[in-house]
Length: 387
Image (cartoon, rainbow, N blue to C red; front, side, top):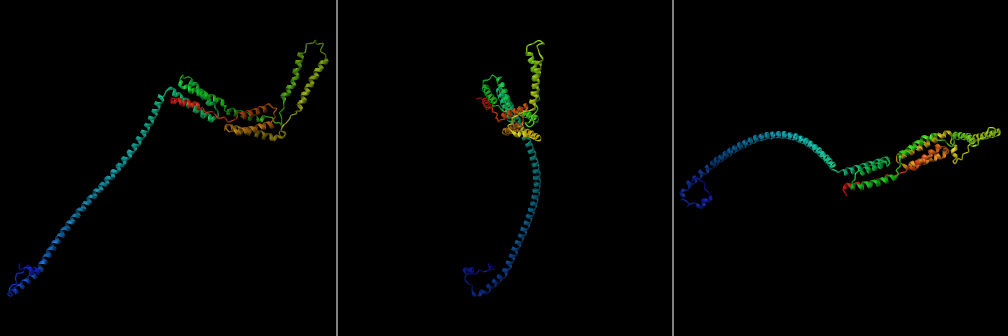
C-alpha cells in the first residue's frame, strides 16, 4: 500500500492521526521512490498499448487486404459470369429474332390462307344462295339485270330500241310463267313498253344516212346561175305530136282510099310541122322568176366554194347529231336549207329531193329523253321483297 501514490483529497479525509515528529524523514523517502517509478510504468503501458494497437492495425490491414482480394476475385468471377451471360443473351436474342421472323412468315402465310378460305367461303355461300333461290327470283333478277343493261345502251346510243327490245323479251319471258306473283311485274313491263314506244326517240343512224346521201348529191345539183338542159321534156314534147297523129288516124272512121284527098294530107303535115317548130322555139327561150337576184350573180369559180360551203354545213350537222347537240344541228340544217332555196334550181327533181331530205332531218332531229322503266323496277323490287 506504501507504493501507491497519494491522493491529496483522500489523504486529507481519511488519514490517521499524524505520527510523531520523529517518523517524518522516512515518509518523504517512500514518496520519492514512488514518483520516480511512475513514468516508467506509463511508458511500458503506452508501449504495450501501442504494440497492441499496431498488432490490431496489422491484423486489420491484413484482413482488409484479404477481403479486398476476395472481393476482386469475386468481381472478376462475376464479370466473367456476366460476359458469359451477355454472350448467351445475344445468342438467345438472335435465336429469338430468327424465331420471330419465322413466326411472322408463318403468320403471313396463315393470314393469306385465312383470307383465301374466307373468300372461298363467301363464294361458296353465294353459290349456295344462288342455288337455293327459287325460279321466280332468278327470273326477276335476270329481267332486272337486262333492263339496267338496256338503259345503259340507250344512254350511249341515244336510241330507245335496246330498251324496247328488252322490255318485249321480258314480257314474253314472264308470260311463260303462270305465277300470280309475277302478274304485277308483267303489267308494269307492259306499261313501260307503251311509254317507251310513244316517246318517239330520234333515230340518229337513219338521219346521218340521209345527210350522207344529200352530201353525195351536192356536186350534181344545178344552180340557178347555170340551169341544166331539160332534154327529157323536149323529147317528150316532140314525141307527143307523133303519137297523137296515129291516135287521131285510128280514131277517125275508115274511109275509102279514093276519098282521102291531097288537101287533107297537106293540112295534117302542116299542122305537124307547126307543132315541132313551136317546141323548138320554146326550147330556145326560158323565162324563170327568181326571188333572189344575187343567185344569178354567182360566178362559175364561186360555184365551187358555194357547193363546198354547203357540204361543210351538212357535215357539221352530221357531227352535231352524232354528238347529241341538236341545237347546233338545227342551226346548220337551217343554213343548208336556206342555201338550197336561194342558189339552186327549185325546178330540178334532185334539188327538190335534197331539200325535202334536209327538211325531214331538221324536223326529226330533236332532243327526246328516253323514258326510264321505273314502274318495272319498282314492281321487281316489291316482288323480290315478298310484298
